[in-house]
Image (cartoon, rainbow, N blue to C red; front, side, top):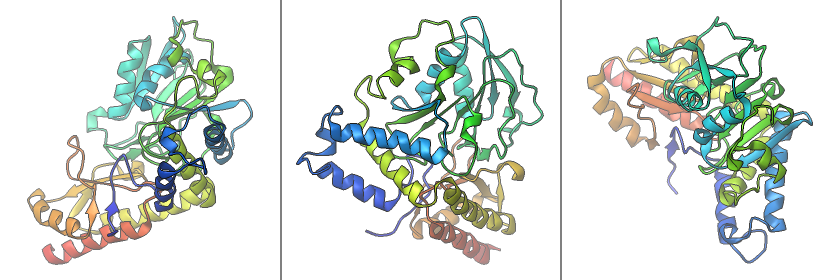
Length: 357
């Protein structure tokens, strides 16, 4: 197979060994003479997969005993509603930070459930920065934020210190660096960035915080119902959960969060050092809020884009076209992306400067 440097924002690159193992399991799983995608999710073979995936999350994040892990479906998008129904009291309210498209989508869905107070909003500058120095209302049921913003390329470098339960959508930066997971009442994340293929979402929560909203919650949206069934209330996305398990094994073998942080720090430094040095490009996001996962940038002269596009495509780079909300380019530096791919992109930028500068 020819080497392609995959900077896609999601579904994104996975470790090659994970893809190979997952592909083999599609042919035959666990010596059963059956494909992974045709075995019963109630078989002991797959139940072992679900148990290992959930336990690896707990181990990698160092979660205390009162935390539960679920692998469900619907992505973080369904999570926007699920979170509000489980944690917002019937006559209460929730506080939200608006830092981009997915944060604003979470706000929209939560408003259908109850009262939402948006306490900070970066839309005034096209979400090019992360709000700071906001006041968290102590009478809110929880504070919700999105840790990394894939479209705009911003990321919380420090998490809010909250006097109320802290809830975070970590879809695009979970498992990318060290943090204290027990500071959060609930974390949720779509798998398709740093953890696996599309089709699964992980919920990580303090189970003691559930069951206090006073609401009648539809069973599928009730996180307690899923805990009682060990993520098996309905048929799970078997392939997605299995591939997440393999990726979590890979993360553990690479040194866990400490190893991922070192790997990702090297990649983001490699890229941003060149972006700041190269006079033909500039970044979208404020330097202090730059995402480690999604680097957004553009040419100073957009008329040169046709020539630059030819060069990066010739270098077997894919997936760096920027989102229409920002334009320009976006290089997604997720866990599985090797630093060698980042260096190829940096070399193209240097060569473009040599030719056009």
